[in-house]
Length: 228
Ligand code: HEM
Ligand code: HEM
Image (cartoon, rainbow, N blue to C red; front, side, top):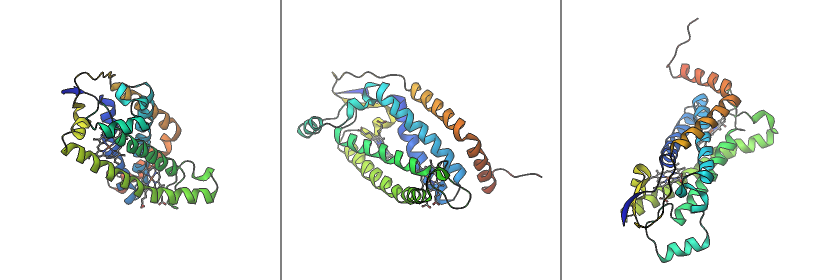
């Protein structure tokens, strides 16, 4: 066994900023600060979009084909549950569920409305029945994300305590694995670049609207004052 780098900076940046943004999204929704809410939602969408692209063109350990849990991989892991250079097949199942869950939460937000001043950009483009459904979904689906993320975090803590330092690895990028494992990492900066490009696309689409709402929220929380 040898301490080797298995995660590029892009994967780590994606993971921990995603966690912070989801906490921020919940908090801003609770406070009814929907400008901040939407701003964070577009940053999250750009990160998730960049991570999905990275899953096809990125470092070997970040690629979906490297960790999509096939039956063979699951059985092999059951026979020989050793630290692996990448995601464990079981955690990979949860990881895919989490990515899908976050995308659904995001998509339903586009059609949600607080029936006052905030509405997603697709709210007025779909039928009112569908918008009601999406809005309800946006509320209760968040509980599913909390439940999945809770199980995922507990499993990670369990692995960590068993000596397979998966949480440390998500911070440092390094894990003790088989010295012969072949790992081909690419610069994580590309993920940052992809995120910036996607964020710019979001800006072109919704920037003006979101910036107006962010300003209104900044007034509400007292960060800026309006002078006549
Ligand atoms: C809303 C909360 C969370 C979400 C949506 C989430 C989602 C994800 C995703 C999508 C990945 C795959 C990363 C990639 O390949 O790019 C991942 C990996 C991982 N997450 Fe989380 N996560 C959350 C919270 C946490 C927390 C609180 C912890 C720590 C206790 C944690 C520990 C880990 C670890 C250790 C891995 C790597 C697993 C492995 O080595 O197979 N996650 N998570
Ligand atoms: C993954 C990203 C997102 C997360 C985690 C999230 C989370 C939440 C949560 C938890 C609530 C409900 C708060 C409560 O029950 O009081 C909420 C409400 C809301 N969200 Fe999001 N949201 C996300 C994306 C979006 C997006 C992309 C938009 C629109 C651009 C959006 C617009 C709204 C609106 C308008 C509401 C108010 C709905 C109502 O009061 O009926 N959200 N969000």
